[in-house]
Image (cartoon, rainbow, N blue to C red):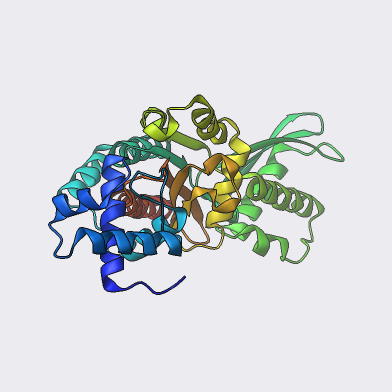
Amino acid sequence: MIELTERQKNLLLLIIRDYIESAQPIGSKRLMEHYRLDFSPATIRNEMSALTEMGYLRQPHTSAGRVPTEDGYRYFVSQMMHNAELPASVQHTISHQFHQSRADVDQWMTLAASILAHQSQGVSVITAPHSEQARYKHVELISTQGRQVLMVLVMAGGEVSQQILTLAEPVTQDRLSQTAARLNALLAALAVDAISALPARPDALDQDILTLIAQEMRRATSSASGEIYTDGLTNVLSEPEFAEADEARRALKIFEERSTLQDLLARTTTNSNIGGLQVIIGGEGEWEELRQCSMVIARYGVPGMATGTLGVLGPMRMSYTKTIPTVRYVAGILSDLVNDRIAGE
């Protein structure tokens, strides 16, 4: 892209801010009247034409004003991404709401979804925290009948797996309890990779159970994507961009097809840092469902332990100056809560 002059930068930012608020094409007359600019309408028109040629603005109709393009929004976001802050009063309100909630993951997710939807007037999307690599906490082995044994495996973070095992021969409850005690002492707080790397156990039953534990922990790691919580869908459907039924259905489709939503969240945050933001504008050529939308997404949690994703979807005309700091702030609160929960365990 061609480097913008300071005047072009200022005009572009004014046009985008005004369009986000009004949803109406912005003309030179409106800019002069609203912002009392110290240069002529002819100069404004010339600069708007230049910005259009550069690809930052477009003209929907011959006689209409200009509206931002995807590149225009990207430039806008790049200019305010690190400067936008949530007012202290809003931070206090959000923090107080979480402080009053119970120490319960489901309640945290529901509250976070509600807060994001309300503050951004978009659709909130949150995945519950899940282990990046399963970490061992406790196992119980319970004799049921004959050669069958119930294995109850508890992982750090609270995930519980119950599995019926069929052993080669019947084993007493005393021996099962002794095996569980030895494994609990050996495996305490180990991640699945460390468990798989342990040398073979001299006791055959210990080794069999150890192998099954590692297999179950790998399954839990590979299948964990986190339950998805959403709120505020009516916020998006009330926007003028989605007045047409086809556009509304396209926006809804990504929420109906959860696998698509999970794929989007996973692909956009896999390599991002905790608290790092991603802004997807117009689907970035990859997600047709999002061609009229933008998403602001962040990871939260504790690296290497348990993480999740949260974000807001709205029209491309969303209020980035409000949505970006809200997503960043709520991600920080959820990271602190997950960290406190893990420390408490």
